[in-house]
Image 1 (cartoon, protein in one colour):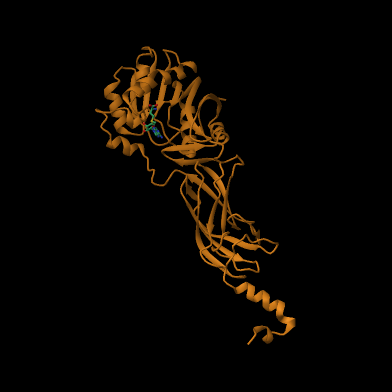
Image 2 (image 1 turned 30 degrees about the vertical axis):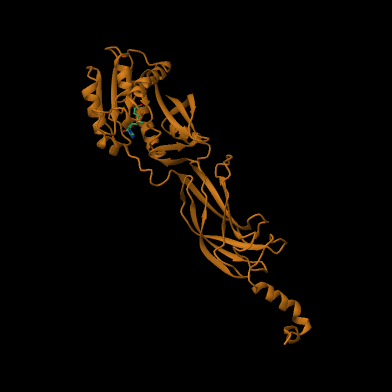
Length: 366
Ligand SMILES: C[S@@+](CC[C@H](N)C(=O)[O-])C[C@H]1O[C@@H](n2cnc3c(N)ncnc32)[C@H](O)[C@@H]1O
C-alpha cells in the first residue's frame, strides 16, 4: 500500500522531516544551510601535551541539526581542532580533523575520544573543538565553545636527569659529553668563548668567580689559565661525580669545588665579582631559577654581575619543557629576577628551536 495514503496531508511535511532525520547518512556533497548546529563539550583532556605527537581528547558531540551526520560520504562530518597560542603570539597552524565514530541522529549525542595533531613547538596553547565537515562549512556552535588549555612540552619519554647522566658516565674516558659538548674538540673550542663572555662583562684576572653548574670544568679550565693568584674560582654542581672530577683535575690552591642543592649554593655572602650559570637555567624550572637567582644575588659582591643563558619563547606564558630543555617567557624571567633584586640586560642572543631564542643575560643588583 502507498505510505502516502496512511499519512493525512496536513501531517505530511512533519512526516517528511522525521523520515529525513532518520534515514541513513549518505552525504556526498557538503552539508550547508543555517540548520547546521551542534554542541561540542570537553569531557576529559590532559592539560599537558607532547610536541608533535597526537593529542587525545574525550568530547561529547550533540547534533542539533535536523539531519543525521556521520563519517560517511565525500564530506565526512567530524571534529575540527584549532590551536592558538595562549600568549597571543602567532604560531604554526596545526589544525586537525577527526571524523565522528558513527552516525549521530538529530538530538542525539555521542561521546568519544578524538585524536588531534599537537603543535610542534613547546608553548601554552588553547585548543578549540567544533563540529565541521572535511571540505565543507562548519556547524554553528550551540552553547559555549569547547576549548581547553594545553601546555605543550617535550615527548613524555624524553627523560633527562643530570644526576643519572653523571652516575652512568665514565668521566675518565669521556669528560665532555655528560656536560653537553658532543666531542672533546667542541669542549676545547667552547672554553675561551665562555670565558670571553665573562671578560666582556668585567671579569678581571684578579676577579672572584662563582661557577654554578660547573659540570666537568669547561669554565674552570679556561679560568685556570686566566685568573691570578689574587683571584679565585669556586665551582659547584648538583652532581657529586662532576665535583669529584673537577677536584682531581683543576688543582690550583685558589680553586675550590663543592656539591650544591637544586636551589641552594654553598657560597659565602657578597664574596664574588661574577656568578656564572652556563647552561644551567636551560635545565631548571622557573621556581628553581628564581631561588638560584636569589642565591646568586646574595653571593654577589658590590658591582658584580650574574651571567646566565636561558631559552626564551614567545609561545610560553611562564614555562614549558622538561629538564632536557626548559623554555621560559622572557617577561616572566625578568619578574623573577626583579624579585631577587636584580635588573637584567640581554647581552647576546642565538636562535634555538622554532621561535625560541637562547638569550644570554647579565643580571646586576638594582
Ligand atoms: C649543560 S651542563 C653545563 C656545564 C657547564 N656549566 C658548562 O658550561 O660546560 C649543565 C650542568 O648544570 C648542572 N646543574 C643542573 N641543575 C643544577 C642546579 N640546580 N645547581 C647546580 N648545578 C646544576 C648539571 O649537573 C650540569 O653539570
